[in-house]
Image (cartoon, rainbow, N blue to C red; front, top):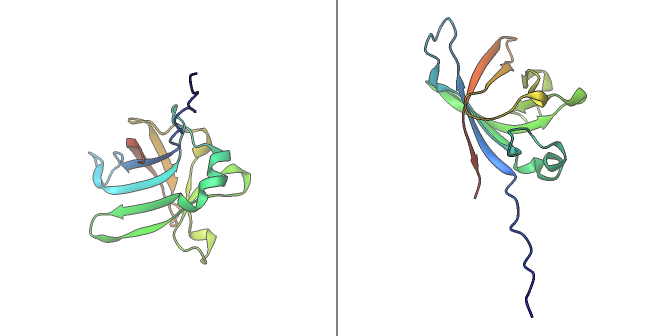
Length: 134
């Protein structure tokens, strides 16, 4: 008699690293300014909304900026389907960094993603890596 084995579990959580793309103050971009976040990302690079609801406590973000302390927070889903990085769980949501059309972006190396920062500036970041978590 043969025993059926269940398929291996699918790894949904991935660590995405984005670095600042070219802009006037950084004509070559910057490896020292960017974001690393953990979220359920499909093989084609899209954030999986249903999986996010199950795993949102594990969806974290780290904003790094040369010469400044890292900011650590959560990836959050906002009204209207927008995604944001929230650094103070009990703080003012107007200070969140909101992704521009992130619900339609693909997180694959080489793609570009725009983030609206708390000061209102829209900055563009390049996806550097997308790694499965162990």
